[in-house]
Every structure is written in structure tokens, then in C-alpha cells.
Length: 268
Image 1 (cartoon, one colour):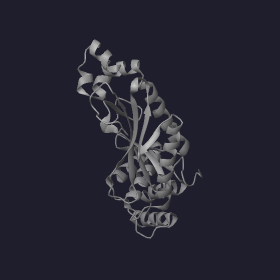
Image 2: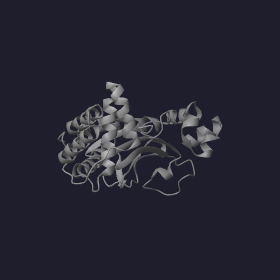
Image 3: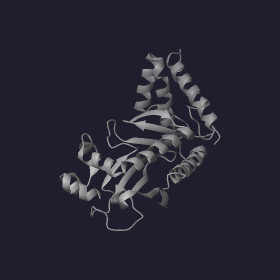
Image 4: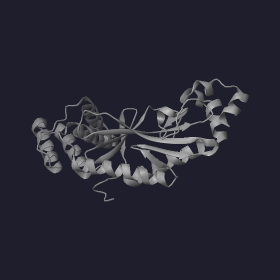
């Protein structure tokens, strides 16, 4: 996909705007220079509405960048996310990017023999009659240009009376579940955000990086490979019985409280 439609780094127009805004803070007339920088950004984005930089998180990231050059990228990312929340209509590039993200997700999971059985839900049969579920969970946003989503995984086990239908299985059917290839959450939920034609990663409420097409495919590939391994009987026993898995994963009570013999029967 063309890098202009799915950039792998912060687009130059946003880096340039961030640089001008930092320079404005140190100029003789910061208010006028700030407005001029935003006017240039507005024109570059091709939008008519006025833009602002009065968000608390933008101010915090700006102040950090004024004192530490290494904090510049975080300021640019925070600015981009703030601008995306302000747009009155979905930015055309954001709409195209969202469609392509869904296509890439389906394409990568298909290589691991997942079938898309519903919108944002993929199933794959594993050993022992178990079913692996991968689900895209979109978070409701009040901002037209912002779309947030997480990728979750789960395992449906026929030996645990947790799900009573044949499929397609969703996260609510899973006895064992986690997020983005992990059963632990040391930094909170891992979130992807589409805004101003970019895909951002957000972890622990901080935008961390711009994710390009190849980077996103690599993350989905790792998630699918993780699911494939974790559905194996030995890995399941480790997840359910071992530390630190017990405190970092949502497990049906019957699995959590099983002794070694019961667990062996449940895992099949």
C-alpha cells in the first residue's frame, strides 16, 4: 500500500507543524506564531475548520519537548491524536486506512487457517476439539475521525461447559482469554488508534508509535502464532496452573480451581 495512505512514520506535515509550534513558544509573539502554525497545518490537511492546541496532554507533551529534544516524537504523536479528535468529519485517508486494516487482518489470519465467521471475529479449529478465537474489538468514540480497537484472543474448550453452542464462537464463549498475544497486562490494554490517516499504538494511555502496514501485519502474525502455540495441551496446562499466568488471565472458575487430575481431564 502506498506509504502516503498508510505511513510507517509520523507524516512530515505533522512533524513540521509540531516543530513550528515549539518554535512559536520561544518567539517574540507566541500567540500569533502558534495561530500561523495551525493555519498552515489546517491548509495542509485540507480542512476548513479552525484547529487548537489547548488540550492538557498536548500542553504537557509540548513542555516536555521544549526541555528534551528526544521527546519531540511523542509531542508530534500527541498533537496528531488531538487534531484527529477535533475533526468534524472523518478524514478521507482515515476511512481508507480503516478498510485496509480490516483487509490486512483477514489476510494474515487466513494464512493461519482462521475463518472469518462474523464481522471482526475469526475462528480456527485446534487440537482436542478446541477453538481459537481472534476478535477485533472496536471502542466507541465520540470523535468522527478517531477509531480505536484492540485485538483479543481466546480459547473455547468443549470439556468446559462454558459455551453451549456450536459457533461461530466469540470472546464471550472463551474459557481462556487474553489480549494481543499476551496473558499478562503489565502496561494496561494495548490499543490501536486510527486518526488523521495514521495508525497509532497506544499503551498505558500514551501514544507510542506510528504503525505502518508491514508493522501491523507483523503484529497480527505474532498474535496468530501465539494463539496456535497456546492452544496446545501442554501450554494450556502451563497457563492455567503456572505462575504468573493465574493472576494475569481470565479463566473459567472450573479451570482455575481444578486439581492436577481434574485439570488433565478438562484439557482432554
